[in-house]
Amino acid sequence: MANKKITFLIIISLLFITNYSSAQETSSIVRTNIYEMKSKYHSFGSFFVITAEGGGNLAISDFATPGVSYLGRGGFELFFPSTGFATLGLRVFGGYGELTGKDDKGKFAGAGTSARLITKFKTQFSSIEGGLVIAFGKNTVIPYLAGGIYYIFKYSPADESKNALYSPVDRDGFLSYMGEFGIRFFLTNSISFNIAAKYNVGKVDDLDGFLYNKNDSYISAVAGLSLHLFHDRRVR
Image 1: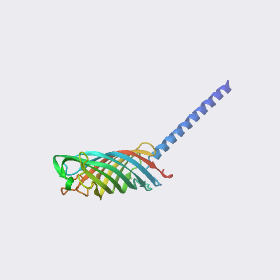
Image 2 (image 1 turned 60 degrees about the vertical axis):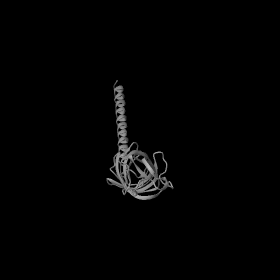
Image 3 (image 1 turned 180 degrees about the vertical axis):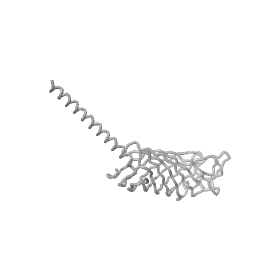
Image 4 (image 1 turned 120 degrees about the vertical axis):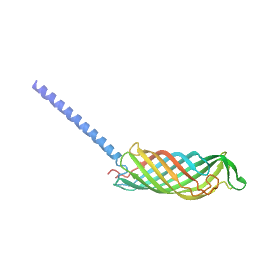
């Protein structure tokens, strides 16, 4: 009888030890995962970020009512090693989009034989931008600021029916600068969902096809996903 009690106590003890060890291991794994998630932008190693986003543009032009149109962009960033609150990086993005606006009174837009009175414009463009980005914090929500220059290769002002306002159709490109604020929300250790707003400073007055001594600018808002390709020594 005594042997049965001893055996029973040994079995109970082994079960307790096994469960305790398993709980400790699970807790350790959870802590490790949380730690890694908090180490994304707080790293001894550099890493790349590949991004694809879509959204819209709000034109600030000579037309009385700004319009909202589409924008798609993609690019990559390289972040440098950092053990502080802020992480510095470089970025290059390319995009394609449209600007639009309307004016019930109409504007005499365009030039030459293509010039005419229009109430709404649509301008398609392609661009590339580059500059610096600074990401803040080390948790799963990472706000960032970015700034730099952008270049619009060619843009094509047209009326509502997309009939060109100039001949030739495309206008020469121009160089200007922009500023952006965004937030990245990490979904996994490598993928984040992003939202961002950007102000693009205008350098020409005919993005809308109408000249009136005021350069046309536009605001962009986008959302999308980023893939973070981390260095092996990413965890601090």
